Amino acid sequence: MSRQFEKVMKCYEYYQSVTAFKPRVGLILGSGLGNYARNMQVECEIPYGDIPGFPVSTVEGHDGRFLLGYIGTVPVVVMKGRVHYYEGYSIEDVVLPVRLMKLMGIEVLFLTNASGGINRSFHVGDFMMITDQISNFVPSPLIGENVAELGTRFPDMTHIYDVELMEVIRTTAEEEKIQIQEGVYVQSSGPNFESPAEIRMFAAIGADAVGMSTACEAITARHAGVRVCGISCISNMACGITGEELSHLDVQAVADKRSEEFERLVTKVIEKI
Ligand code: HPA
Image (tube, rainbow, N blue to C red; front, top):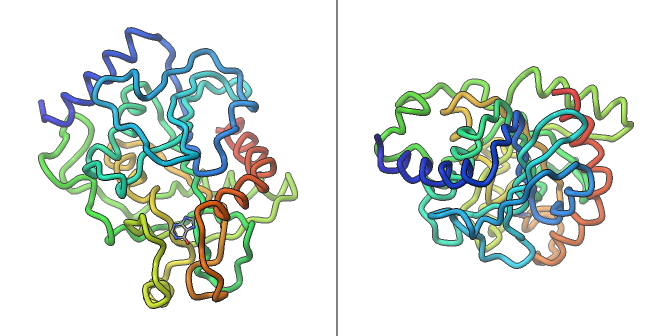
């Protein structure tokens, strides 16, 4: 058994000692979207700090716990808060929660985040369905001994974001009269926001939005055969686009302001999965 799989198994053994709940969908909440609990029937909560070896976030406003329960009739595991690569964990540890959720039983992973808009047709507060990603600016979470128990050494990444799930998001947004953009997400390491020159580079290579999470989680899920979808809330225009300086507080405030509509969209999509 690979060392990393052993570590995930220890977390899973703890999980099994707490609950027999088997979620079908995993949902990771981005900054400012942490009040999602009001949309679900919570059966059980597990603080990350209680799980042996589990990475714990150090960022203010990133509360850390699993919420297990139902959205409509769908059994879900919601991650209220995630850890980021910039917190100093190895990239393998950053994605450990995704592997743990796979062991819990998820078939679909719904990724959400706040991100900086690179595409100049976007506006602050827009939602963007992620159609593809660029992850090469952080190490691959699959570097190291392959976790063969979960997936193959060289997994295909042609359709990281599931084509059918994207269609569900499109039709749901239309039904709910929620405008949604589409585009490519690039993961930057953070914790500093990018420079204007870096944003020009990201625009030139085809990115529409930039954030500090998500892409590594999507790769890990695909490696393990989990279907993936994702939505970004454009919390600011990326550095250099408007000339305004960026702050984490502004990012959270915008995500917060848009959270009601965001939560409605996420809920309606999950009810259809
Ligand atoms: N850059 C990187 N990450 C982010 C941004 C940004 O502009 N906004 C929210 N998360």
